[in-house]
Length: 233
Image (tube, rainbow, N blue to C red; front, side, top):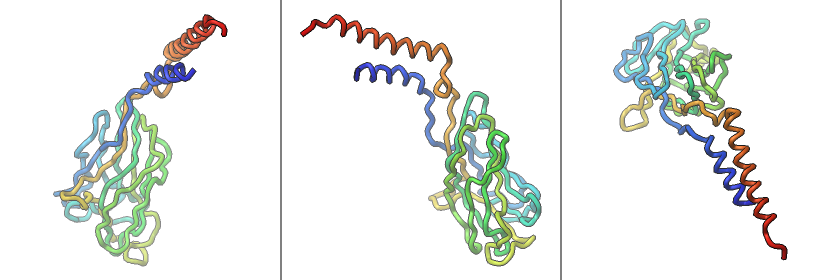
């Protein structure tokens, strides 16, 4: 029976193709940007990933070298937005964002990274904490962002009214996003995860299930016949 189990496992493994490995899905290059631009195009997208510009919503662009920078974080709905769409027939997941951030003393001290998968409700998937005005290089772990078959949209919003330097966030307080700098050369803002073709791994077709079942049944039948023919002791 052990050999039959192994052979059945081999048959079933035929469905486990198209496996994906964690990799760079999309990046944005902020080096050389003035900070006052309102959007940045993706500098890289993986195969079958369709990039969405990194942009601002209800914010006031502000100069800040090598970043995208803005004030107006007390405005209703103020946010940075970014993300990507997925080509038909593929599914993606996300496990990490790599970036640097900085607030002015009156800029937001606590921010939420929220995500909408396949047009669904925005949910908080990570947090950014700013204490003082220093640059903050981060590798943010992202959980539960799986099954992305249409696309994902992120937004970074102020989580509360507290300022990075203490007190309340001011209307002129700024918050910027840039490239990760704890490397020999700056690493572009990165979205890491996986993307793979939707295959029979997810939902095997009826004909494939029949073939798998028939193969196992044949193995069991062959084993039974060999047992029946074995001489009695």
